Amino acid sequence: MICTVTFNPSLDYIVRVDDMRLGVINRTTYEKILPGGKGVNVSIVLGNLGHASRALGFVAGFTGDELCRLCAEAGVETDFIRVAEGMTRINAKVKSNEETELNGMGPKIAEKDVEVLLAKLDALGEGDTLVISGSVPAALPHDMYERIMERLQGRGVRVVVDAEKDLLTRVLRYRPFLVKPNNHELGDIFGVTLRARDEVVPYARRLQKMGAANVLVSMAGEGGVLVAETGEVFQSPAAKGTVVNSVGAGDSSVAGFLAGLMETGSYETAFKMALATGSASAFSDHLATRPEVEALLATRH
Image (cartoon, rainbow, N blue to C red; front, side, top):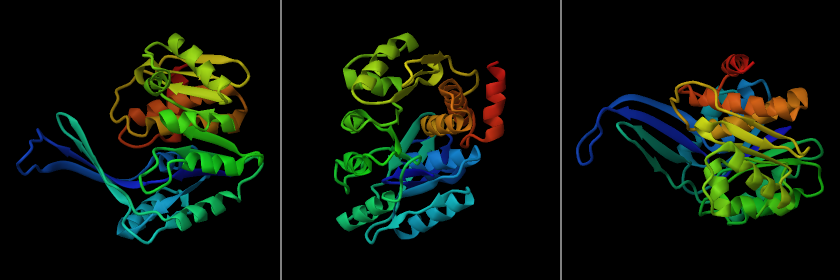
């Protein structure tokens, strides 16, 4: 079983506005509401690639009801914890001559709600995979990542972590199976600027020495790098295409990596699948589908 955790999932309200201006009424020319959140994205893409998963997190209010409905519509099994106060946040993403985002706060999460989540994760065991991704909202303890990983120690659960800076570095001692920073996040950890794939490799190895088994670094138009637990290093430029929407591309890479590894057991194939899946999402206004990924893979041979 694969489970994903999104602490603060959302409804993403995406609109396009011609020449948006402040202080006046702006009318949309396009609008769409999508289920949002990094772990939710991973679950959706896994489903698109033919692999079942279960999405966990916290929801509240009528927006929480709609998030559950949209996830079901997308074929995602959910086991969200419903909390009493507040509502699932709405993130407004305004696309105009510039892109602007307004992200909501999310519901109030009590310690008893956290305990319910931890109890659900207790069902995971040998051979299961847990994907934890995204920021920790102010309503939660800042050490949520560590609490989860400490609780799962010794159970044979493969944990994937997609988080920035301290959230990532603080859990390396628990030996996550995979971490997926992008090159900017990796550079921020070590106080350097990383632009080229060759520059990324020594810093990815440093994350390994700190505890990560596998380090997948996404680099947008530059492609990506995988430093595997086998000692192998894989690098590749990005697929050619027009970026339509980069939101969810990194989450799609995680899903592609897991799908490729489950299907073949090969880190090289998993890496290729990760890059193709991330690109397929970036090149469309929706999250990657299997035919789109396979079409991109076919162009790389």
